[in-house]
Length: 175
Image (tube, rainbow, N blue to C red):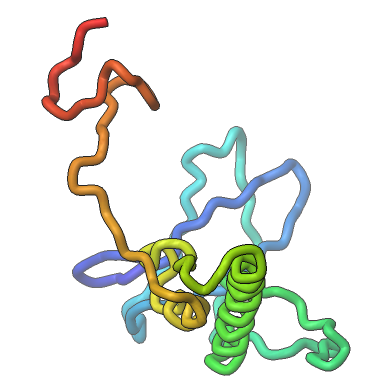
């Protein structure tokens, strides 16, 4: 947390306590500079019983790199855990992998549809709003990219789907 105005923080996490000593390592990448103005807060508001803390330490650490024994060639690179920072290169590799995996899947579906129909059947994937900018890359082999919205989509009040309560007028229709 900042120790000066605006008094905000950047990492809030919950940990599960037991009646045994545990070690917790919580990697943090601050979203703002905390030089000479940072603090660590431990809130045990919902703990049932006494909480003992020992050997609290903070320190600077760079982003995670390949660990000993990890290799791209051998396929032994582990996924990062929650809150672990990745190097820019590792993040770029992961993003490229996700895009290529999605592209391969989408193009397999495209090729299957093409084989069963003809070139006049337009093929698209999911709405581009659901995939961020990467979806432009992963779906670039399709006929068009879908970005539709519903100008007058049903709104159901009080239930998930109700053929009598379509919500167009905001009034409930009789049954």
